[in-house]
Image 1: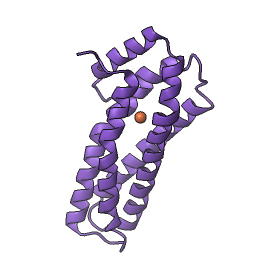
Image 2: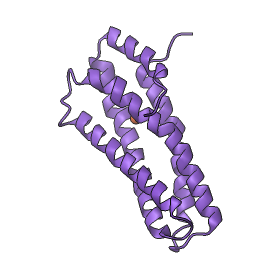
Image 3: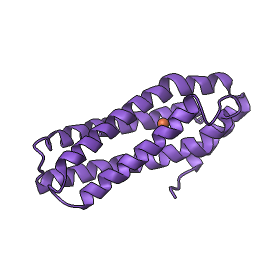
Image 4: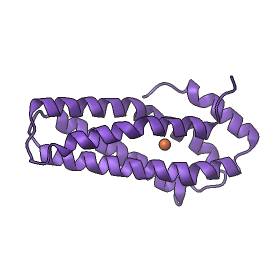
Length: 162
Ligand SMILES: [Fe+2]
């Protein structure tokens, strides 16, 4: 079977993480009262772990394999690529913050956990839409056929976080 295109592979990863974001949003919605029982904290931690499993490697695949060849036609310090990179940093920061709050235990700061989780979900959904609708079409338009073929081949080979 032919390897799917790079943007198809990365878009499929977006579609895998999207329902996990809906799960996280609905779990933290129950934290509105500002306190959390052990069960909802456990479910929240599980949801964050599933997102982390999908997202951490995805962000690195984009940064290490897709983004560098885009720098031939997009500056790294302004415009779409700069925005995507800044959002990756924001997402990592909020992911770390959620893990820190969850590790602190049930009810310690449920309102803050809810606030960070909902911001994370909102930023990641908007980020995915920007990549799917703006960045990936630009990549398809400007990358050479040989670059596209190489990127599509290298993406699945990149499996190691850290
Ligand atoms: Fe992405």
